Image (cartoon, rainbow, N blue to C red; front, side, top):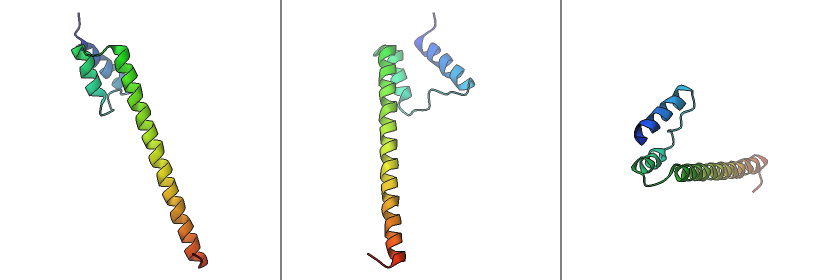
Length: 86
């Protein structure tokens, strides 16, 4: 019987070969090690990983929104300067 580590490495390699790497998230390996050690189940690993991806998505959207608001404010200032108004 294959060890959990062997199973994980085989699946990671297969996904990478298919052009869909699954181990690019910085915390994926931490979760994988917990599963390999038997500290968490595969459904728990999946749930935690999905939660990490959601958190990343929220943070990315928040940063984009904040960046957009800053750019809007800068553009507004530039328009006022060009028009000679404050």
